[in-house]
Image (cartoon, rainbow, N blue to C red; front, side, top):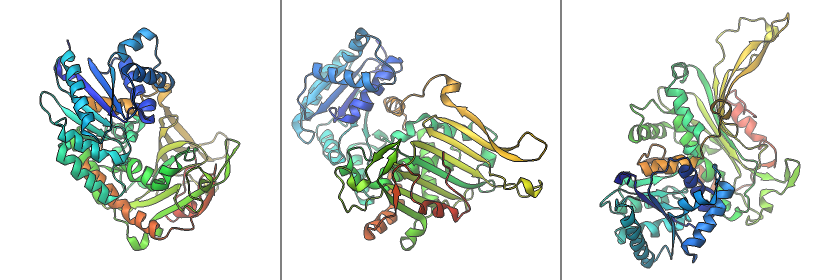
Length: 495
């Protein structure tokens, strides 16, 4: 029998939903198949839908076969995993469900050695976060008695600063902050984590990682897809809330943070919080100088004609919700003073790509004769998805009698070097939560800082609803985006 620390029970609220089927159970299966999931374990799904244990197992098997990184080799192997899957039906707002959950947990734990380690995952609409947390507290299921108790809460964590503060207060009345894991799946991506490895494990980059050598930082998350039938959700969100307020600001912090004293949760999250404190607040009277929004119209993607945003299902015909957003930020500290950080994200852009671009300053004096200019700046490109990897773009002489310079790329591709695709983000994040490592999770104060930073932009856009600049679906965004970044002498990198 493994030690008590390894025994755990995972309760997934909203287990009949898409996230559980497409991401959570496939990630748990891949961890199990790779022999990295602590055993023994129990996974208890709960939702309003009536379902037996056997029906739940069959549904999850379909999801694993379709979406898991590691495939099911045989029914026998699956059956061993599925024997640890259970289901409890009930209303997440009703105390009756929690009485049934307690009974089921105690029955299962008695078979596993009674360690009492429990992890709750809120894979539900945000409107249920407060009722579930409250009911867990009232039922005594949030207490740490024999083992540990933790809760994972999905984004969005609040809709604005006030709602985030209210949710933080409610959650921390039931759970201690150390028990709360606010998940951002973007931080689970291998290449995002590689930002810290690149900076802090190599002696050649960190001496250049400052205002003396860096002219500009760009972060781009481009999606070729539209709202994919989620028009109702996107109408309430928009690109700034959906991507920048959480994912992209997290990556900004990894790029800009000071080296932590140690690589543990408290030290890393302290440094990320310091970056948020140093980002210059947006002046409500000058939002248009530092923020840009736009909306996609009809166009062509991969040779296929697609509708504009206002023609999508669930979208109001006169909608002024942004599907493209860009921000210009400055970090007022010793390392980054004067270096602009540009972030942009959009739907229905030319291709799916996420990357970080560090543009270095040009040489102070160009010794080559004028025929060789202009010389391109050096770029360090960290590709988050797809084709995960890192590229360093430098100038080199072209072959021939004339001295002519051209950019060349020194390239590292993750799958070519390591011979396999990186694990899915949810695999890493679930395993970290089980092991009690909160390094890649958001702390409550960081969530509030992110809302506090972006709220002036959101409020300004709400007061001035439009009309929004338009861009053709399948393009690289609005024409205004080029002028937006050109003020600092830069231009968006087009992968």
